[in-house]
Length: 202
Image 1 (cartoon, rainbow, N blue to C red):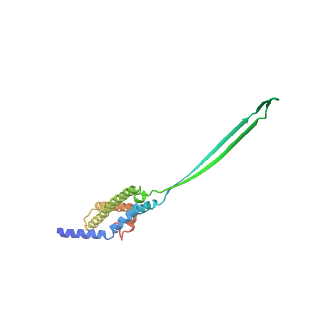
Image 2 (image 1 turned 45 degrees about the vertical axis):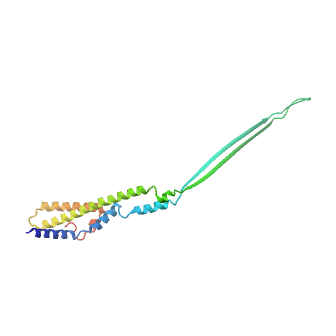
């Protein structure tokens, strides 16, 4: 068999192996959803940050005070005249004042600088970069596992066509295929196996 014939047979096996597989991008989207990396919440965060600048920062304070004031006046009158010394009646005067004061203060402060540049913008941008990096790592992992699965399926199909293939080698390939399928299911929350077309494990 020539090299061109071998390549043609290999290509046919790969095409045959890939027939029952879900689309790679659909698999990646399922993994994004399962990992909570689908969509772009940063746009919504930015919008809410701009809107929050229109809302004031409110503060309310209550001050309560008690004032207790007492005045005591004692007056004695002594009168000396030709008739003698007279000690007059003592005049005592006491006053006590008790005052209860409660003051309420409300304050609203607008940070108009947040309309132009919100303080949380840098944190949002950092979170956006982290989400992009996480999505790229996940896509790389899905891509590698997806193509490894197709390669394993093609190898299993090739061994089935070869009458002299060892059953131990066939079992090892089947186990590796199951492992890769399991990893894809872990990344997609089981979506991958649910969306296989026909016989998924060859």
